[in-house]
Amino acid sequence: MRTEVAIIGAGPAGLLLAHLLAQDGVESIVVETRTQEYVAARIRAGILEHSSVELLRSVGLGANIDAHGDEHRGIYLQWPHERHHLDFVDLVGRSVWVYGQTQVQADLVAASEAAGRHVVYGVSDTAVHDLDTDRPSVTFTDADGVQQRIEAEVVVGCDGSFGVSRSAVPETVRETWERVYPYSWLGILADVPPSTDELIYAWHPDGFALHSMRSDTVSRFYLQVPNGTDVTEWSDDRIWDGLATRLGHDQDGWQLTPGPITDRSVLPMRSFVQQPMRHGRLFLAGDAGHIVPPTGAKGLNLAIADVALLAPALSALLRKRESGLADAYSDTALRRVWRCEHFSWWMTSMLHTSDDPFDAQLQLSQLRWVTSSSAGASGLAENYAGLAIGF
Ligand code: FAD
Ligand code: DHB
Image (cartoon, rainbow, N blue to C red; front, side):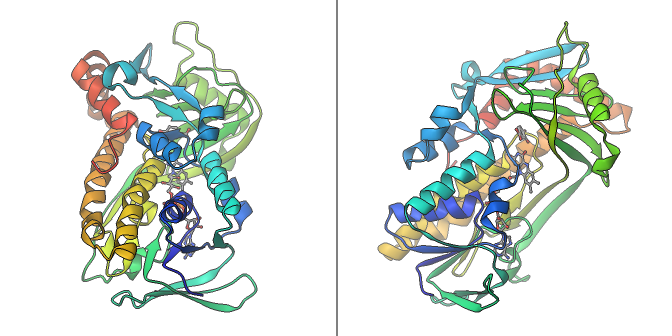
């Protein structure tokens, strides 16, 4: 096979990149290890930043967000006996949208199918070659067991945190940073209307809890749990009791409504960055280049921001033979990546409890400052509602 851009990974980064490139008339082929059904069903992020929504709208992917998404002015931050609303619109003039990654993925697949784009699912043994030349290639075994090769001008690794492209950058060239957190999240999806109008991020001595949502009838929750937790340790009753305690049945008559749990899984948390995000004709985008802990909902938004920068850079490189934007891609993307790395680490550190009572006092002091000072509140709001793409 021959194309201009070979994209590895059909998650949001890969499919959105293919969509953006097609708008500039640049051809691509996407290869994906999993089946289309598996990728569509994966339950992950739930919040879109202002600039992600604007970008998706500007490229014809906003209709379902406008019809079915839920615009939120802000979030609640709380600790025992206190709940405070931060209004991002008042603070920084930008809102966020509740719109699940499964919905973003479905919109991308629909656009890809409508345009007849080439996505190869169910591949194995993906490998990249000749990155130092201007004829790089990707090889893989297709679902029928046949060896395939895509010859391209550029390869983009959108293959997430466990992909192959990141490690194709030679060790002598790449630098990596990593932090593994001493706790995980138990993620729960339930068929029950949300018990709140906007997300609640709760600090509690038993551990962090988050009340999020997907629609008027589906709620999403997270509980801080120790690393190595087995989901079977958490019965439905234990989950609802834990959520009710941490989310605060002590908050002025507020009540959590339980309902049938339809999905539960344990998510480990880490921060990771690899730089540069380009090596020769290989570019990295999304989780292939960087991971954030989920507190603050940055992972999906960063993937969108990366490909929004990369698509015009590749169009200029391939259509006009102008390399300026492509040469600047790694540095430009990494400025925003590191800002989001810091914000995600900061939100995580402020809200997750440890065994150290000194930490707890610092966290509560920080929470009181963020919810009572306009400088503190605006800092959180500016980062949560999201910085401009290309910041
Ligand atoms: P991915 O969505 O991971 O897509 C990468 C794709 O590449 C996958 O489909 C994978 O199958 C494919 N692939 C991997 N290796 C190969 C290969 N060798 N060949 C071909 N294809 C390959 N973020 C939030 O903001 N909030 C959340 O609540 C949240 N929850 C999450 C829960 C989980 C379990 C995970 C893993 C992530 C979560 N994230 C969350 C992060 C967010 O979902 C990611 O940041 C986002 O999916 C990044 O998109 P991506 O396209 O870069 O990577
Ligand atoms: C969701 C996940 C997050 O990590 C977050 O900070 C907010 C919402 C969610 O899945 O809905």
